Image (cartoon, rainbow, N blue to C red; front, side, top):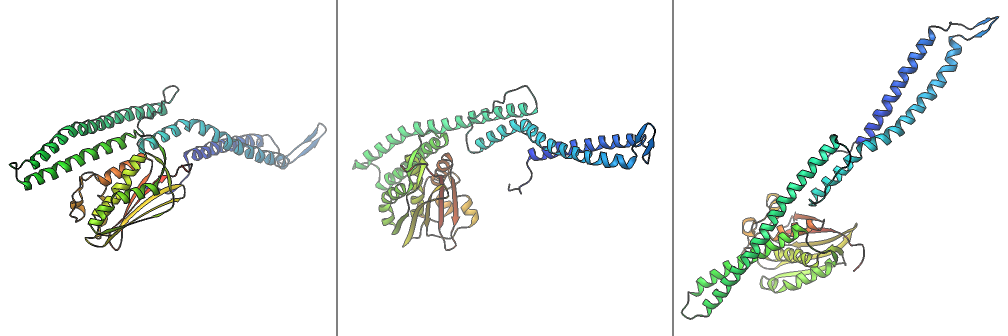
Amino acid sequence: MAREPGLSVRLKFTLSYAGFLVVASALLLAAVWLFLLRYVPERANYTIDGFFPGRDDLVRAFVPAAAWALLFLLVFGLAGGWFLAGRMLAPLSRITDATRRAAKGSLSYRIELPGRQDEFRELADSFDTMLARLEAQVAEQQRFAANASHELRTPLAISRTLLEVARSDPGGPSPELIERLEAVNTRAIELTEALLVLSRSDQRAFTRTEVDLSLVAEEAAETLLPLAERRRVSIAVSGDVAWAEGSPALLQQVATNLVHNAVVHNLPDGGTVRVETATIGGEARLSVENTGERLSPQAVATLTEPFQRGTERIRSDHVGVGLGLAIVQSIVRAHDGQLAIEALDDGGLRVVVRLPAATGAG
C-alpha cells in the first residue's frame, strides 16, 4: 500500500527527547525564579553593608542566562536524542533489512540479533523462526516439483518410444489415435520440462554472468522464425546492447517464452512481433510487443498465473501448458528484476522485462 512520506521514527524520538529536556529545564528554571522572587525586594537598596539588587536587576541578570541555557539544552537534547534514538533503533533496521530480503525471495537470511532479551530481540527471534519455517516449506515444495518432474521424464520418454513403434507398425492402432496420443505425450513432456525450469528459477540455483539481452533476443527470434512464418507473423528485433547479470540459459528461456507467446497469441494473418532491448537508468530492458485482440485488465492480471492456458485467456488455436509467463515471472524475480505487462489500445500486449544492468560490458 502506497503511503505519503512522513517523519522517521528516529526523528520523532529525537524531537521528543529534546522537547522533554527543554520543557523540564524550563520548569526547573521557572521554579528557581519563583523561589528567588520570594527573597528579593522589589527595588534595589543601598545600605552601609553594601548594595542589594532588586527584582529588575535580577531580571536583567537571570533572563539572558536562562535563555542561553535553554538554547544549549535544546541543541544538546537534539544531538543526544539523535544519537540515543539511533542506538535504540539499530536492531529495528536489521529487522527491516531482513523483511526486505524475504520479500525479494531470500528466505535463508537470518537476523540473529545479539544481546539480552528485550522486545526487539523477541521480535527478531520470532521473525527468524518464521523465516526458517517458510524456507523449509518452500524447499520441500521445490524438491517435490523437481523430483516429480524428473520421475515423469522416464515414463513419458518410454511412452513416446512406444508411440513411434506403433506408428511404424502397419497393423497397429489407427493414425488418428496415435496422433492424439502423441499430442498428449508431447504436452506432458513440455509440462515436465516447464516444471523443472520453474523449480530451478525458484531455487536461484544458477551462476550469474554478464548476458547481452540483445543477443538473447536475436537468438530467440531466429529460433522461432519458422513458427512465425507458418503463422504469417513477422518478427522485428531492434535496440541497443543491454548487459544484465544472470543465467544465460534462464534469460534465454525468458526471451524465447515471450517471443513464442507473442507469435502464437497474435492475429491469424499478418500479425507482427516487435522485440527491443535497451539500457535505461541502470536497468537492462527487454520489450516484446505483439498485435492481437484487445484484452481487458482482468485478463491481463491472470497472464502470469500458473496453468492459465492461452485458450482460457486469449482466443488462440495454440494450447500450451500454462506455465510460459509464470516461468518468465519466476526467472525475472530470481534475477531481482521486474515484469510489466500492458494491454495495448489497438490490441495485443507489451511485455517489458527490467533487470539490473551489469557493471561491466562482457
